[in-house]
Length: 234
Image 1: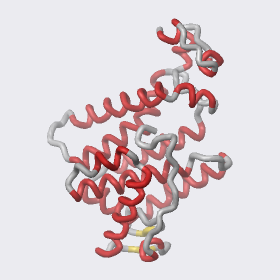
Image 2 (image 1 turned 135 degrees about the vertical axis):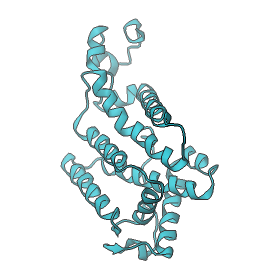
Image 3 (image 1 turned 45 degrees about the horizontal axis):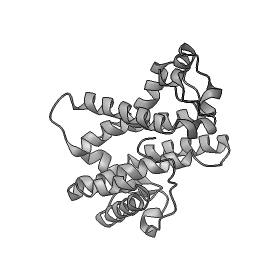
Image 4 (image 1 turned 120 degrees about the vertical axis):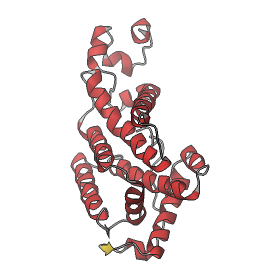
């Protein structure tokens, strides 16, 4: 996913006991401040250049971007790594359930108070969050895409939906902003896919649409072997 480099894996970050307590309700000032600090610490340690870009923002949107990043980072890491596929599906389903609770003020993770506050304060559409989690789930169940329309749906969920959430934090007045956010997300994710073609193929994952491979007589085996000939460039 474009916002989560494949080379980075989240590592545990210490958090105050007050925000780790399961089922904590409400968002008192100290709890919220600690949660934002946790998100910023995670972002600083895991997000690389994203964090330095966030630092250029005024404090409120910077903290909100860290909360959004932390939510996305955890979701991505739940479905990555060596765990069994069934375990990953269960982890993602539980993260969805915890999202439901968090958005009504019941927190089970240190990032939840800050993330809840961010979503509520900036009016981030719930659909954006669901779309991103759907995209994460697609990586568990899909390793081939038949058509570009199928690939577009994936790119929209894992990248455009993130951009649509971001513009609510940054603020916009032009009604065309969501259109541009969607287009930029698609472009960035396609770039990410092209950058990682060989790495993904080695993992058994081919994002290039099968209809296009067939149209140019280019096989998955060619991709796995790094055959960058005229058929590929076409």
